[in-house]
Length: 356
Image 1 (cartoon, rainbow, N blue to C red):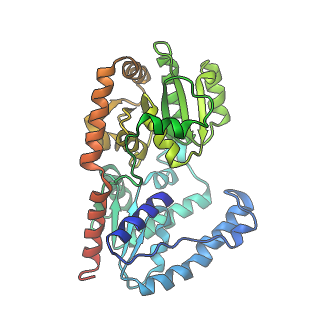
Image 2 (cartoon, helix red, strand yellow; image 1 turned 135 degrees about the vertical axis):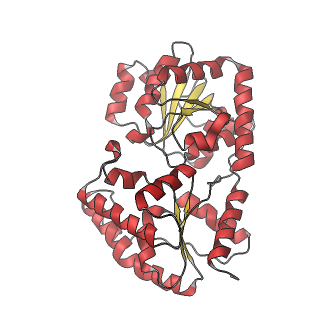
Image 3 (cartoon, rainbow, N blue to C red; image 1 turned 90 degrees about the vertical axis):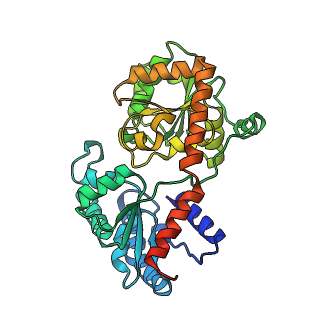
């Protein structure tokens, strides 16, 4: 979300708007930086006890406040007498806290946090949902409608086709990639379905000579065991937490993005890949059906053999790959340009601050 917020800051500044981006800064969190245990709670002190004072001071001087990540929606409750816009990227964690997504069940403190987030979203003047699926989810869960609207995401980085020399330069220091590959971008969270990606890849290997590149978080122990059991571990390359320039090069070089997610709020990697001319093979879950439509090869979540067949076809059939490449580029260029997204947000700002 930091990349998205920085993109918003950059684009709004270029349009001449007076904007300031603020976020919690580590104070107590410096003592022990951790996502769990004592370090996590020290971070909560910075976020929930120190940051609200900073936010209130900044909001007092502003015409409105835009909370860029619904995960910080509780801060809307701190803003008095100013319009608050929240961008809602998904309701998946909220649904997990409600027990609706078994893979995303949370602890007691997590359930309290998600309740707090729901209250903040309900309190906001306006909530911009990044897809129709997220909008429908928010309506159902929050039992509100009047403050909800849809603003489809645009690219938060200028992903584009690169020439082969530039791709070679960016990937030059990367070991392990020695043949054509498909790429998966994301984490090892179960909703990203990396286990499904491994099974699809194993099936595709019966017809191809590919590698599978995982870009993002490291494979966890269960996934490594599965890869070994499927006898594909020696065909896997892990690129852990790569910079965006490396991800762009991987999209440009890959035969396809394999994106068999179980749950998404939008699915950024799919349009990032398409913007680079990389065909996409994905699950037909909402919102991917909305975001991709006929511009990608979509299969039911459990149709892993069908996904494998599509990977094999993209690998062997140049005309088919060229067709899907062109469809993807047209999808992004016509629907997901950053300028279109910014036009929508500026229109919302003007609605919330007439004459501002």
